[in-house]
Image (cartoon, rainbow, N blue to C red; front, side):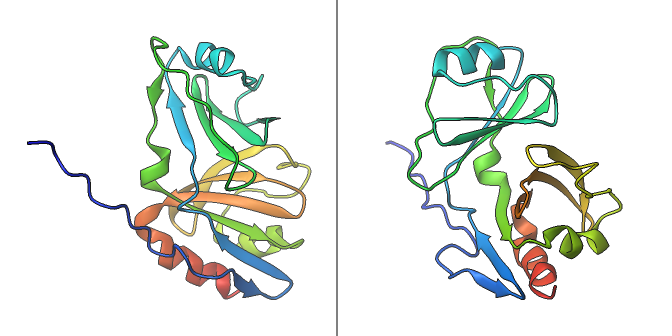
Amino acid sequence: MAAMTSIRHFPLTGLPPAATPGGFILDRTAWPRKGLRGAGTPAWCAAAGLPFPGRVNTVAQSHGLRIARLGSFELLIVPDSRSAAIPDAPGIPDAFDGYRDESWAWLRVERPEWRDLLAPLTSTDLSPRSAPAGSVVQTRLATLDAVLLIEDDAVDIFADIASTDFLLALLGEG
């Protein structure tokens, strides 16, 4: 008998954007994304026709995707729109799924002063000098391990999916 896979449920999926003073908090947890680890990640990118970012904590863009380099051989690949397709390159030795689609919530804060909103929640310097657009910040945010993909007027926050409601409540108070 074949095993049944349960329907995936994400805590905030389907809710409208949460308005904050001067912007929005968007829940993108249900959007597709891919985590990749292992020494084969550069070869995986080449086979998928995607760039491999030149340095850790930087983001490359191609075909409606952002490719964030989190470590020597660790990537997070996210689409700029829900319809952008993340390619697959099966059969690449030493390239392993990082399971970022099931373990991380994805919240996007679209607001010009997002840095001011997050500043009280982390000890990391989020100034444009230290965290320019196109960079990745790996930090503790509101006591959670978090990955931030930095843009000028927005930030994508990836954190433990079990703490989505907690993080959204903190961000919504800003």
